[in-house]
Length: 66
Image (tube, rainbow, N blue to C red; front, side, top):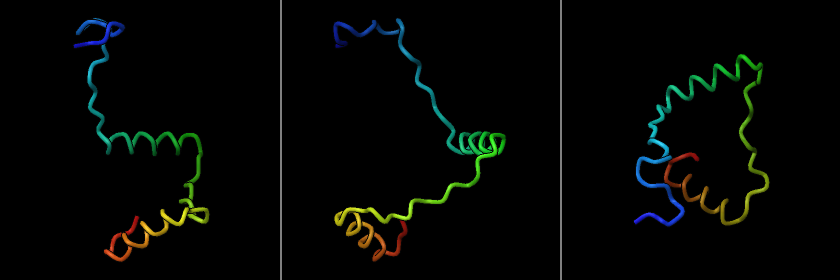
């Protein structure tokens, strides 16, 4: 059941769109190159909360890198 403010099915609804992530990445890289935006470094992580650091430490113990 739709809410009273929702449009009826097919009436003003947005069709579902599938985004190809590889193609999106290529488009973004091309736009960055065209705009002359340099590669941005990752966050150094100097302001992490203790709980976030504990989570990352546990992930590292498993051999993964986040």
